[in-house]
Image (cartoon, rainbow, N blue to C red; front, side):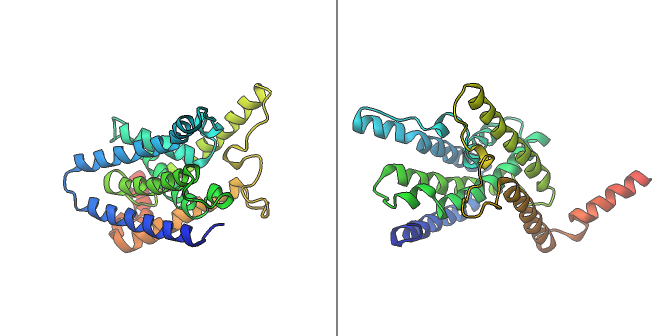
Length: 251
């Protein structure tokens, strides 16, 4: 059951550890050290993701490969691999990297938080002593940490982040339909990739993946607009930047 005593304790301990670690990393002056910490954190996510294979094998002599271990079925699978790409991407000054990093930040942050608070595996088996349960919570917790590390390294909160988020959402939906098509081509029952076939909450069928995406874009626009109003100089805010570009074109 979600939000029982052990779940609440895990949430509190993990979030305290995450934010205290981020505060500590904030005061690290050398960017190289921050990058190393970021790379280690994303590699840990991958290691934890595949760890049930080794735990099961060395415990029982057999191991079951879940579909999400072979293919990026769910948004957090996408976030995990995008974090790897961002961490080891060479040309970090390119526009493409900026778009990828922006989308990765929001997807991994929100996906990680949701994965900790509303973990489906824990909901069905509320036992932290079971590694199959604990590894999912740990992976999402480290994902939250990695996303916040992006703020200390490559991502700046701006309204223009929406461009990367929009491109990323389109890519995510296309990737989901591609995997569904591959399953059908192989005469296999298609999985609910990116929740494209069935809504994530059966009791609320109107909350589909496209509505969630649209809500996400709206939320990103809202929080980035508020951030710019508070922390960014007036002449550098998104609407004034648009006005500036128009004046340049008119001239």
